[in-house]
Image (cartoon, rainbow, N blue to C red; front, side, top):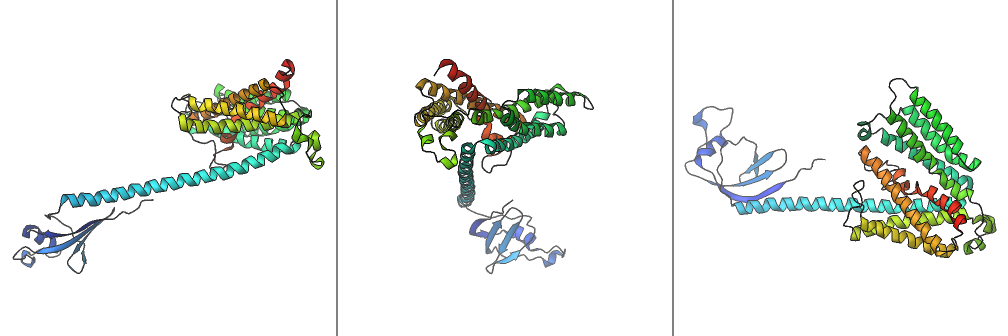
Length: 404
């Protein structure tokens, strides 16, 4: 919105020369020079100029009468230093207003991030504790929204300038397939055959479409099924598939029977809580470390990330994993807790950079606008996409193999 700014250029005494006063006072409708008002001697008249963005207003006389006449020639004597001071004051006032508005906008955005971040954290914590169908339904809804955002990014102008996106009906079908994958994982325990069959059907639909099928369509669609559907399903396998009770967990021993008792605290639940908390700590410490010590850029994909922030995030992630392992008494060895923290950290960083690369090619800042102050669902869960598969593989295969 354009704002009108008024700069009052003080009231000064101007001496008008007889040469230009006649042209100022002459009325356009009278051409006779005999009717021109020409004074016998120069007069001292008080003038007050007010300028704005659209017009100039000339005030004449002691009574402040307003004259809207076209000035052809006017010679005025004014102190240039006083005029410059008035203009500088107006510029400084405008700059201060802009800075204040920008500060208020940042403060409002920070409040939104904190409020919605706390709300999301409490909600996700309750869903993780509940497990079962509640956790799976939550994952299916999040996967569906994330898949829609991914295919919208693929169809964005930045990416479509260098490739042909998949048809809209294929994108919608793939979003539904991705949402069904967590449910199939809970019911059957694995989705390898289902994912392979779905990928085959989608590939045939792309190859048999009208027009000229492109490899870019096939590759972006297959990656969407893998990135938005297959990888997030490992969180269901981690939370609901590892149902062995964590017998050494002190919290589980005092857990109310009405909420499942000690059997409710399984290895999968403890592993989920440690993994999610470690990722949150990694993001937080990396942000604080980058703000405080950040000097060396990490990669061109995300210019704001620095090596100093990454190292700080790694330390915070490992420390959180060790502390929670002592609280939950799992894993039992220090080496396992450190390895679990390192694995969670690298999974979160890789997921974050992958989503940043997609957004950079798409030419957008956020994947969506679902969460005020945070962006889209992919902006919030990008660090968790690869971590679920790594955490499940670590608990399922690495710990029993090496006995740690």
